[in-house]
Image 1 (cartoon, helix red, strand yellow):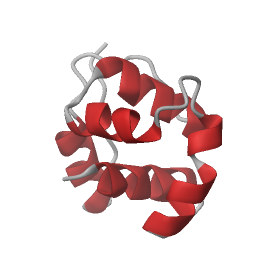
Image 2: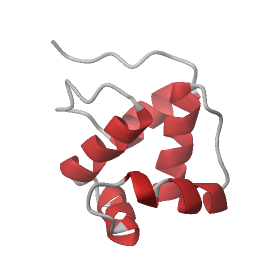
Image 3: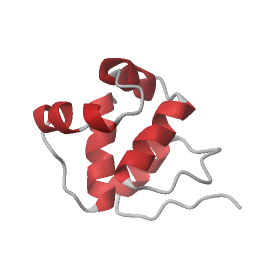
Length: 88
């Protein structure tokens, strides 16, 4: 799973509908606090907590509780049309 796959799933989760990779490359960099879009995408793919939280904030998704959040598990569950259960 690459950063674009994650961002497309976030688009789906928020009801935006997936933007193209090119649209993401145009629209997201200006919304990042650090401005290093390629670095952020690499950190997102590496499951860096800060990168995940920053992306979730940009998309308006709840960032808590994040642990033990597993991006692949959550996306896989979302794709199956099931809700993601968060531990208390």
